Amino acid sequence: MYAETNERMVKAQELSMLVDTSIQAITNWYRWKEEHPDHELAKWLPEYTQLPGGRRTRFWKESEVWKLKEFKKHITYGRNGIMAAATQKYVIKEKDDKRYIQRTINLLIKNNVSPEYIDMVKEALNEEYQNRKAA
Image (cartoon, rainbow, N blue to C red; front, side, top):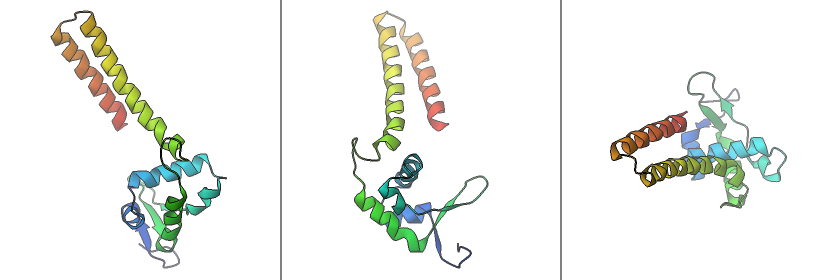
């Protein structure tokens, strides 16, 4: 695809290969940028074009791929890195859901509830968890 300036545009999948990172990481980077627009590293994340409609495909100018590579070089990783706030809240929520399921099952076992009922509750909780995860 080409922009109005006849410049080659790349999709998120191609961009992730060029920058050597995942599409989810790129999504997290832009989520972080929304939360920290004035941070000095936010300037390395160029604007992208997003198509309207169903899939809302994102496109970046090929000439600006170097900016994302620079951003990747300068960010710190790990739970104390700059991306922690943008990524950990989703990981923590998932872990909390799994802990809740396990605590509920353990409580049922402790109270000598029948194995059939435990299986039924476990299946319902896992289904609810999967539905929330998919949403």
